[in-house]
Image (cartoon, rainbow, N blue to C red; front, side, top):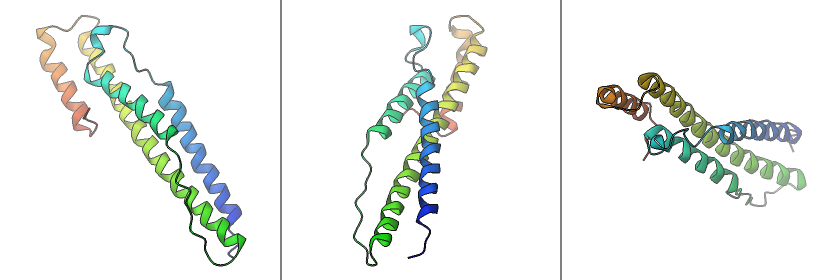
Length: 144
């Protein structure tokens, strides 16, 4: 009995609040372009996948299986809190990775808009658009 379960509860609440904030930002990001000709471009495909991934981590059940430790109810509560905290850390980490992928894709969209400058893609844009695609892949967030 270490008397720290109240602190563990607060830590679980903090981590879950971080996850909730990330989920809010993930769900608020756009996933459909203004023009359908951009629908299958890399950045928009990444944003759609991020929305799917964000939904997935919400729908996954938490692993709350906890072995029965010795020491009574306080030790059981400690073990349960540690398991919940572990699950919360994992969800927050996944949420952070999704959020970072979204941010990279949104920067890709901004660069693409700057490259096109209101025009439709044409052969003169090919080099810059390809470099923009490669940059999205290079930052570690490929579509596949």
